[in-house]
Length: 177
Image (cartoon, rainbow, N blue to C red; front, side):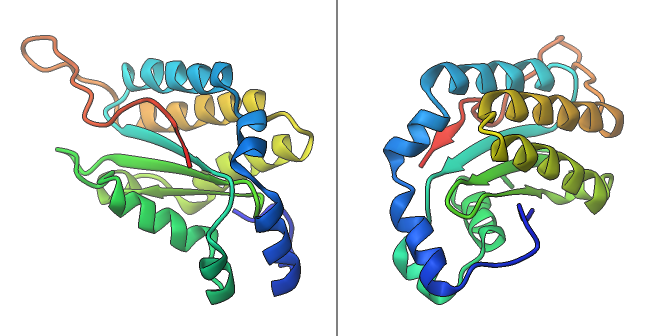
């Protein structure tokens, strides 16, 4: 979801993507933050049936920026590439964070999207980008994940199978690209 209502010009956007390095992304999302995100995903998935994956990307390739690819397009590409759609109940959810564009996108499989409104996803994304604007990456991500898990608890509550097993189909570990 957009951080602001205006899109930067192509030269300005190229500059944003050139300046946002993986090292800068690691400063925003150090290993302690990534571990906290992983723990939040694991805890949330014990209470609902959705499978959540978080991907943080510093910047798009310069070719993607020149083509005008959006964060939304990249989120869909990663949703497919990492097979987030490939879950038993079609309940994969990708939270994609593009630091250079200052955008957060949520892409959910049909088993989830049929039960959650666009406005609910947008509220989660806005909470994250508002926190990021203040430099509060960990706190705003964890708060947004808590909101996301609450939504998912309501629409896909956890029902352990006969053996009491709750299998995890996607890794809880966030990816930093």
